[in-house]
Length: 116
Length: 111
Image (tube, rainbow over all chains, first blue to last red; front, top):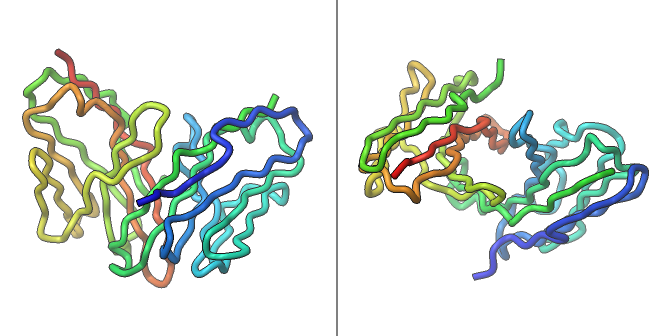
């Protein structure tokens, strides 16, 4: 079975440029999460969706960050304009709520973003 | 104070040793608990869920203490391949579906 698919794997961009990260969740999963991981702060939840609807975006750091989920099989995380402090690994994860809160998360391979 | 706290380590142990990690959480309404494993430059992967009565999967044993708000992971007969970062994860529940991660405990098993 295909897991969570993220693209690109690596992104190097200059400060001020727009960055778009993409995610395809596992088919049938009804929750999708975006996380950011840095050495200093660990894994931080940015936003999560349920059935394509954003439920909680309180972790989105600033208005420069936005996320969409136009359908059940695709989500994007956009940073505009990007800044060097946005450099991190961005993970997408999905979950199927068949076991309620006991349903585990399944992660994609992540996108390593470097903003120079 | 962070919602989920772990000792960052590193824990350096010889092969065959038994090692235990603890994780504390501050939200008493938290509903579910997990241990994930993360290898260097890779994504986190589910190691095991943690059930109220405690559970075991081969060399790994997880326990939950709701009264003291901590979970533990015990690894017996450590292997070199167990070297990784172990992440404690808590789902807040109570109408939200937020999975909150600890910063992880690094384990290095030495030959």
